[in-house]
Length: 268
Image (tube, rainbow, N blue to C red; front, side):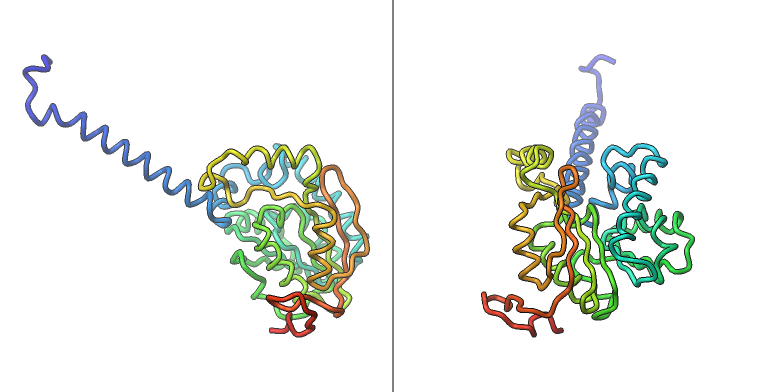
């Protein structure tokens, strides 16, 4: 049709289509940025894509993913012992639970992603396994001194350090006296995690995913755990990560908002 012969409506339709497409793109970017800033939304988004490779980088096949879970379950069992009441903070789809459950009296697991947990339910047909949806702030669904052991692998690294500290406080609270805590942190001084840090240096702050990996130094981890009230029994390197085994103590702890010691700080 000759452009000169188009009606006013025909002339404006392309502009309307262009505007609608532009607004749709803005809405997609808006909701994507919201997912970036929210731990829960981001992990639900990733879980819908490829949960296994997002939990364990590079694990594109189920047998590879399960093999890693079996290996981690074996050394965790040696560390915490059999017939214990155990908690996993950040369980994902149950990579470790699948192989650890049979040796636990009770195995509790929490994750912030409802999508991850729905997949975990399918993988874990064990009567002694209990799954809970977390809120990204605390472990309020569990009472004080419930667990013989708590572990957290490949989870705390994705939190802001202030949020990690809050979770460590909660882990201390729900552990029994002399309970065992096993945790993994990325080694900031490794090439792998320093390169990961550099990836976001020049990215605008509102485009950095909330769940990006944060690295830690050896001294930093030791300092934080000691302030919370853990006694460090073992600290070793595993590839580009730190593996720590600690024990809950009732020795001096930092007083909230000060540098003073106060044993009542963690009582709620």
